[in-house]
Image 1: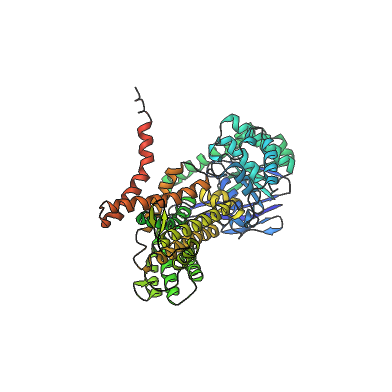
Image 2 (image 1 turned 60 degrees about the horizontal axis):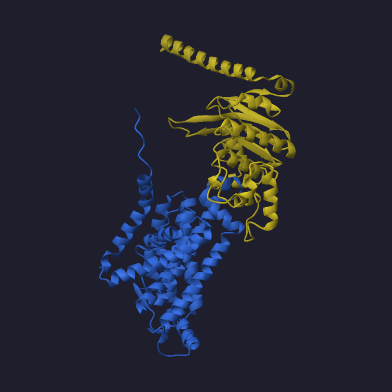
Length: 270
Length: 311
């Protein structure tokens, strides 16, 4: 269970570059729920994900996950509970290390690392079996450097790594945005399989309305660092890509209106 | 022959410097200049303790430990106080100059009659070869001390290289390599990048200080100036090693660094023998590293055909 209570974050406070990225966001995720976050550029959706992951410490509010208050935990401490897949396929794997070594690192996510061997025969067999389920032919290339693989293959492996030890929370940050359509489909199918099989509590950011309505059981739309719409249950079930796009248009129109009104006020009164 | 044996032995001793530089520059991609100070630190601590009649093994170990502390300080400056990596190393290196003078109490400590690892290995050599005079190897007269030192250092470096290789295959060692390769990823897998970097720099500077401790015992003195330019020296060895093995495999890279160090030292010894002015040595080393750094990109440019111009 993830409980985000009224978190706020301002970057570069007190400077001309001040950005109020999160302005009081509260969300409650039941175990096993799959929440999709959509929103325009700069709406704060990735910032929200990073706040949960611990990339930065929030200015106010609290974050609780699986019974622990993780608000002040550092990024690597939170990794005990959280698995992550990044937008950039290069971010989730170590390119100069082999496939087997990368997965072995993930197999100890959040655990102490001592002087035991990173790889042994038993672990290698386990890796091979799991990698075979990807159907990418990677099971025979365990000792190849990950840097030699395609973006889609690397993202599929990152997904496998993030979910290797069942995380309390899985964070997916536009993890198919940098892939070609075919690889993106493949990774989305894999995402669906893994989340369903392990009943993972998931937060996923996406730009694709199609993904938003096809995956997950709840949709949150963010705007200006706040939750604008929260579609659940029946409302979520009725949602179509067109509905979501209409809501985007509404936001855009309201923004234009704001600009015009401000301009008019400026001309009349200043 | 004595010249070549001596050069090879020093090359092997400095291979530990090369391994330390490999760890910081290549594994972590961290330009750690502390090395110039920590190699002297290892030499000065060990030499001073030897003068105070410590056992050579303990004195050498103390030199290693002193180096790990220096590396830790550089790591802490960089990670906890957010000081630029290059500057962290420069600060510690500069501070070490004074510390080395304090440790030695003067700028140079000679090891004339003290029992050192070198004298112990020499004594062992006399026992093993059953001779008090020179050995005859394929018609060459070889001093027992030279032959024994060469064998001793070869075994020590081989052992340490093997230990380092095995370490890189442990859970901690793979986490260390991943920290250099992709810090964002390893953080997301629950590893404190700060902790690993501090640990890695401690290990790197420990090896470098050990190199200094052995060098002082081999050449019979520790000098406060002996560390100048050693980072570049180590880097040159690593680069030569990479060219020799032409592979990314960790075991080959470690072997390469050792071979690179020996080869570089031999080349220098031969060049000096042919009349190279010793004053130019550091200039040439720096120029060599410069060329080695830009050569791969320049070669790629030459190989790739010119781009067709848009019409």
